[in-house]
Image 1: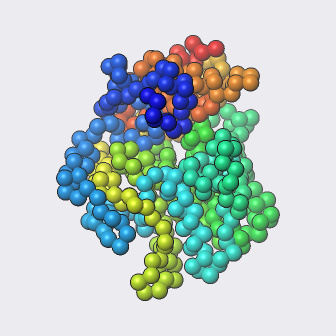
Image 2 (image 1 turned 90 degrees about the horizontal axis):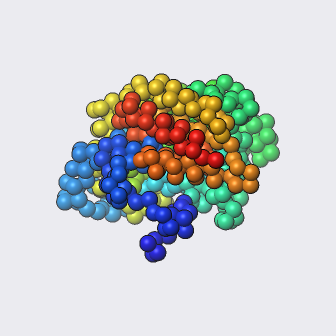
Image 3 (image 1 turned 60 degrees about the vertical axis):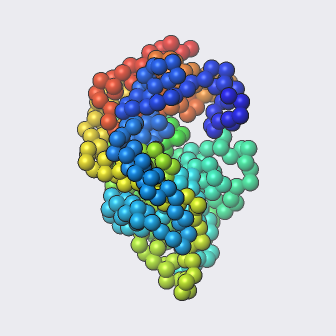
Length: 433
């Protein structure tokens, strides 16, 4: 137990009372005591099609026996091009170019570099500043934490990118508590981009704005009605690229294929990961408008590398095999439509927890919900941790972020499992001081 330094984990607490997963199938994990654990958060927002899906497993097995690895620099392999074609076909219309990476963190940093470089190859080199949002999460690489807005992810690493600023969070508990779906109030928060940030920095120096359409990791913060459209309008007005981080919201989570389509707002660049390969093999991607790709092609000389960026495992053959099989499953089983059909029951059961002690807000959209609890004085996050542990004891896996319980199950969940998920959370809340 001692050699492994666990990520984003209270290591000492875990190793004093380990929670070990040893297998998974469908909607359930199995722990080392043989208990079935209902997966209420799709692993880590990623196992959208459920665990141990035969078509994905078999695709990986075939590929491992055929071509286990191929270097992605100056060489290609067929599945990389097939995976890109399939992803582009599923992408929001207008995002036709695909750059493969290995995670959401890498996708965010790639998108930021791409945005700055795009302006540069067009002769607009002054555009180097990046705008994120408070309570935003864009992974844990230096670019991601620089535009991200989570204090805990930054305080030990004060050497971040300096040319950044942040919009206010859209979270408005006073006006929008217990909203069902998109909150009514807050579209005007997007105006800060024009009223303060472009005024302070000079819009001709801003390369891009990056936001999660729905902030997931900081507690399921649903965008107010009209907010994202207003951001799009302001970015268009000043020639600023708009980046959507859809690492969580992509592939059916909000009851639509993409948040971009759910909210009818097309970004210039979109990042995805997690559900891209159903979490089976690490993979991420950056989707871009063709005109961004074409600007790089036009600016570089013959035989020159147009975009000097990439990773050893970009478009890894096993990841491509997993992704193709996953995208096929989404289509064949209409899992995005299934999520939309289940969303009303999911919403009903989530909001049935209103009135339980400690519950200060409930937020939901599609198959995602956040239940926010009052914090204990001087011990923020401990009540959420206790509810997480009590749910585990009841055979239900949820995610906690501070004192917010987040639920985002695989899209194959059944109605009775939705009922069980929220019943367990309610019992855990009632048992928690």
